[in-house]
Length: 432
Figure 1: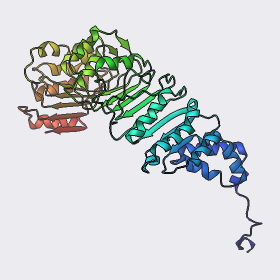
Figure 2 (figure 1 turned 180 degrees about the vertical axis):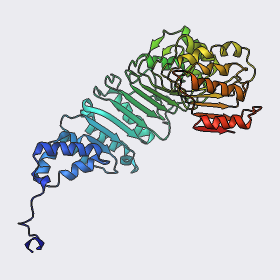
Figure 3 (figure 1 turned 45 degrees about the vertical axis):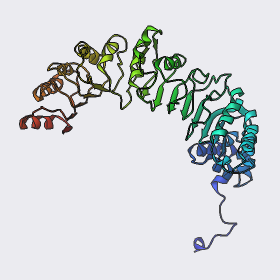
């Protein structure tokens, strides 16, 4: 019965957590912070549990490296404390719009923030800025032009509207950012000539500044040239018909070809610029094009002669708009181009005329092809499609198709027994 009595303080065993050695507590705190949605809250919380936990937390500099300005306060005592406790550790700085919401205080508060963080710019690992008022935004980055951030790896700036200063461009850290790998800008009037655009691994630009220098293939080529470790490029939206859309194919006559073995994603909302880059930047590791981009036959010779894209997994090909005297010559490169696409898994043809012969090249090309879509296409029959599929099934080293979409291919007729054969040999079939 003694075991059923209510416990007294003297009989309650000490918590195992309170008996852990400081080095184990340290690693637990660090791991917990890595998974915490609010790292600042965790740092403060564990430092108020007991004397032991406080001693460990206060001396764990990595727990105090997230410096976030996200409250409408005139004093930044918490941020000052975090900077002190972070000691010499690398910092992640975030500045949001909240400190500048009280009218008439924006300039003074920005000066206070800068006076706190500028002396530590050599420790910045990441700087993220979100939705600042236009005047605060330009003041901040004008000040940062002279800042030195040799350890900065990530710079992310997101604005909701363009700055009202028509002649202003975004050029922080003019002395260079040798460690910068990840650059993300939204509605920021960037300039490709800025030192920021060097030695990057990831480049994301959302919004093309209308009053800045037009996006053109040669300007973007210089960025790719200065970034040998580039892995991803995302630039959108691009307004078609603007400057930089004509004469892009002449880029190959003006610059030397380069090779980028790590570039896997090239998402640019401008077919002319993508096609120009394909003629001067060899991309053996490229996996896919932008989802909305349809490769035009004009680039078939480039893919055959210079840029085989052997790692490409998804491809959309679009036929010419209306009569095109060059189409017959260009489409002759189709079998050779497809032979190079050894990793291709998905292939979409849009409004493409196979001329009664070009569909047959799929019998012996693209050995890993699993998905085929034909939208608005002509120049083939259901029987020729069945023959392609049957030969791929029998061919050694070829994967059989498992998904087939045929949409808006007017004039195509298909007997019931052929439909039955397709259903039996496909995992997914759509006829519309």
